[in-house]
Image (cartoon, rainbow, N blue to C red; front, side, top):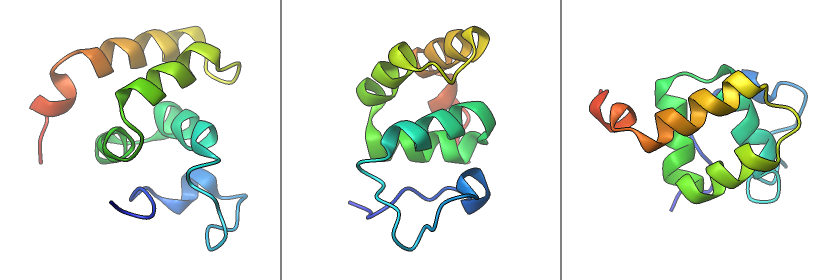
Length: 86
């Protein structure tokens, strides 16, 4: 397993990623990718954190807008994420 998901550092611009704890800070990472990430970054967080943890984060998040939550739930539970390979 990778030590960190392969996502752009610009999504977490305010953190020092050399010491960033990807496991403890999963909520921040998931929220940022769902709000601003691209398709490869979505795939990375699914591989790194799993759908269950992402769906749990969607439920409790006060940061994500309702439309982001609705889209994210739909997208994760559909086949679109896997159909768009590349």
